[in-house]
Length: 288
Length: 256
Image 1 (tube, rainbow over the protein chains, first blue to last red):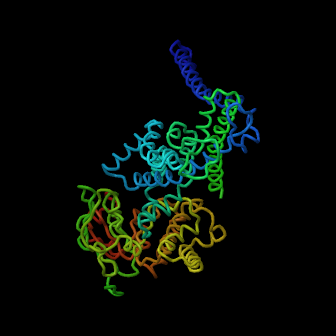
Image 2 (image 1 turned 30 degrees about the vertical axis):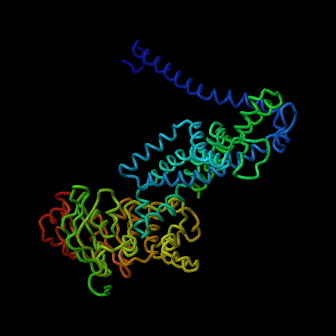
Image 3 (image 1 turned 180 degrees about the horizontal axis):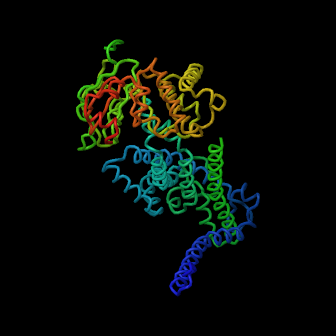
């Protein structure tokens, strides 16, 4: 008897194998389709309106032509920066606790709570911050940044925890055996040792909140000019896109496509840039 | 209470546990200054747990605890007011697997302990780093690449880097937990040579699975079995004329 697959069973098995492989492969490629379609459509609709004025000028009123979204871009920059200042240290501290100290029941409950926070709809976060801050000091950058920071918190916390757990325990013991207190082992050895991974987590969190619209509607509110004070409403790209898109004025709708393109591009380059930097850094370390 | 005569390390009735498991049972042991002491015994006999009690690292494992007295230079490291961080500056440790700090350069790996202990003057740090790397016979191999990552070195070099890191903070006692079990024979020979040289300055307690290694490098040898210290004697006496039947059976390869 030869070793060729000739029987009916063998041929059936091969056919099933090919069909299953084809299905998995096909669906995997299909997963890329939404991204390609969305970014392609935004690119086509928006590219014509991304001009110099879009980046440098303030919005014009309804019915007028021209103008840009300079204030919204600046506003998104301010809001995301402030959210990072609050959300990254807060989330990191939570993640460090969960990874380095969290062995007992308290930690399990905390970890579960953080996971639940991830699934709280962002508009609910906005309403929460409205009640907490906006009713006292009004629509402001503070309120907007707080809402974004709350959305960042669980993402940063869980990514920090997962990354730090990857460090072998022997490294912690080496630090302790050297006569370092635990907090110094964490801050001077563990955190620098996994900085690359931590930054990736931060970037994912930033990319997530840079495009958030719902929580900003109730908190940062938005305006048509440059904000000069952090306790006043501030514009942001997602809210501006939302407002312009539903305005019905052709010139504003056109600009909101441009805004969408800029926002998607921003998030894309943030992700891409971080990953390239990490890749280069790792390659350098392995080489030398 | 610090005395320069008498044993540098005295262990009195030491018991160590992992939860309900009794890993080290009532061990008494004395180590003199500038001695190399080997701990031998089958896997799981408690020798690693035992040395991890000598720098209070055992208690860092959740559910682990120990009781008894361990005196370093006459002072009980388990005294109520003894601080594990201070204890560990006096008792250094080299581990089984080389574990350089990730992301830090060769220089930083050695300098970190100094810096965090408060020695920040650059010239002093540089000097001690060079001294430590020379002492661990690594200097000639790395002097031109001090800024390369510690992890870029070979396994044997990494282990010598870990030794240099330990030496830099100048502990009077150094514990080694099977420091050569992950290394090739040439790297192993280098580490053994270093241990014998270091004896001039420090006291070494070394866990090993290799009985030839124990007889080559140590002045005294302790045989552990099932958490108990079965026999502790001059190395030559223990290997040529063991008093305990179990020791004899172990060193002649009849079990373990």
